[in-house]
View 1 (cartoon, rainbow, N blue to C red):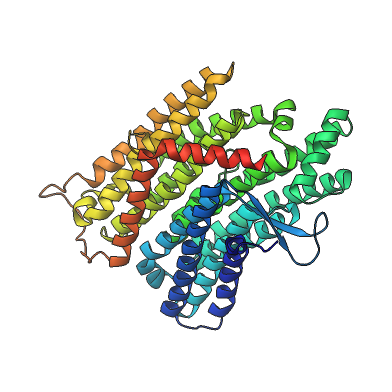
View 2: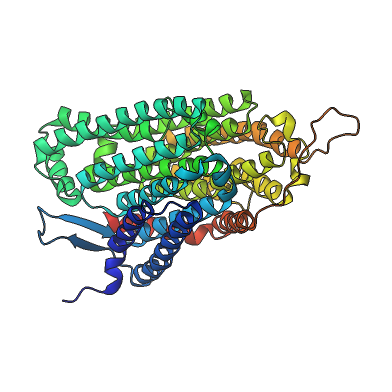
Length: 502
C-alpha cells in the first residue's frame, strides 16, 4: 500500500530544519542566515498546517518507519492531531520570536557570529519537532541533548560575563536532568528489552500486573520524570532560569521560555501515556507527587516574582510558576487533566513569547533599562508593545476571553472527578491568580503611567518600532485571543489527540 504524501511531512520538516542549519554554517552573513531560518520555518509551518488538516479531518494517527529496519528493532515517528497541532503552534511561535527580536539580535550578537545564532535556532526547532513526533525513547534522549546544547548557545549569544555564568548554571542543571533521564531509560531497557514506546508500555503493563520489578519500575519512573522536570525549570529546579532570562537577548528569552521548556514537558506526556501508561503513574502515586510539586511551583515562584524589580526576571519567575499549572494538570492523573496541562503549554508558548518580545521593545524605548522604575510611561513610547504586554499579563492573570482563563477553567473542570484533588486545585488556582495579579498589574500600571513634569527621568531615545516586531506582536496577540475564544474546540481537539495515543 502506497504511503500518503502527508505521512512524510513529520520527517521532512525535521530534515529541512537540520539541513538548513548545515547550510547556514556556510553563510557568513547574519541577514541571509536569518532569511534561511525564516524560510525553513515558514515552509515547515505550511507543510505542518496541511498535515494538521489531513489528520484532523480523518481522525488518523499513523506510524512512519525510518530506514529499512522495521518494527520492533527500527525507528519510528508517530503523528496524530495532537502532534500536528503542537508542531504547528510551536513553528509559528518560533517564526514570531525571531521576527520580533530581529533588531536586538543584530545589536546584541557579534556580526561574525550571527549565522551561528540561527544555526542554533534551526537545531532547537528540529529537536522540538523530533521530541513531538518520535516513537522511540532513545531517539528522544538524543534530541534532548541537541536541544540542551543549542539552548545554551542562545543564552550565551551576547557573550558577556553574566550570560556566560548563566549559561554554565543552565548547562549544569540540564546535564543533571539529561543524566537522570538516560539512567532511568537504561534501567527500563534492561528490564523490558524495548525502546519503542508502544512496546515499552506493553512490557511495563505486564510487569505492573504481575508485580515483578515493582521497585525498579518506580525508580525508572522517578528518574525519568525528575530529569524532565529538572530540565523544564519546575520548582525547586528553577533557580537558573531568572539569570538565563535576565542576561540573554530578547529572542533567546522568548525561545527558551516559550519553546525549549515545552519540549521536555511534551516528552513527559509521552513518558506518562506511551511509555509507562497513565494507570501506572496513578497506581504508584507519581501523579500525586506531580500535583503537589505543581501547586508549590504556582505559589512559591509567584511570591519570588513579587519581590523582583527587574522586568525580565519577573517574567522568568512567572514562567516557573506557569510550569506549575502544567504539572498540576498532569498530576490529576486523568486524560482531561493532561489535556488541560497541554492547553497551558500552548497558551504559555504564545503568551510568554508575546510578553518577552514586548518587554524587549519597551526596554528598547526606555534607554535599554529593565528596572521597572525606568519603564514608567513606556507604553506611550511603544504603544503596540504596551498593548502586547498588557494582553499577555492579563492572560496570565486569567482575564476571560484570553488563553489563561481557558486553562484555569479546564484545570478546575478536570479536578471535579477527583476526591481530595478538587479543593487543592480550587485553592491553588485562587491563590496563584491573586499572586499573578499582584506582580503583573503593577507592571501594567507602571508602563501606562505618564512621567510627570519635573520628575528626574533620563532622556529616552525614541526609535521607530520595526515592522518585523509589529507583525510578530500582532500574530501572537491574535493567537492569545484565539486560544481564549476557541477554547471549546481546542480542548476537544487536544483530548481527542491524547485518546489516539492510548
